Image (cartoon, rainbow, N blue to C red):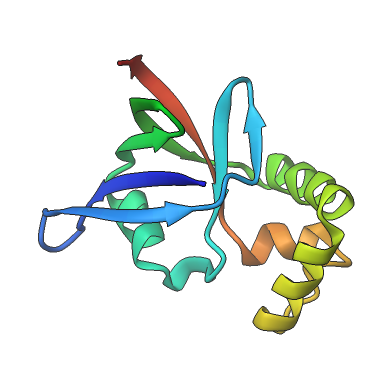
Length: 120
């Protein structure tokens, strides 16, 4: 889990979301919008990808970069193998077969890598 601090797209105020780290890419955490594009944190990060991350005992400024389609398919294929129960539960809650098809998961669930811009 990590704490993501992001700026409200309308208010400009700091917002906070606790998110599951679903993978680590080159030392950077990957997070997924489990509610797709309707999530407030997702919409805020799309509007302003500059975020602050607290992950364990580490805090850092980051840029939230959305995984491209091929990266997302690879991410979800790996996640399905490593976490079959979690993927099945997610599929049941969303009503989308993300537990069987990484292409569907990549289309339905935006994934972001939080790339550090300066370690603190």
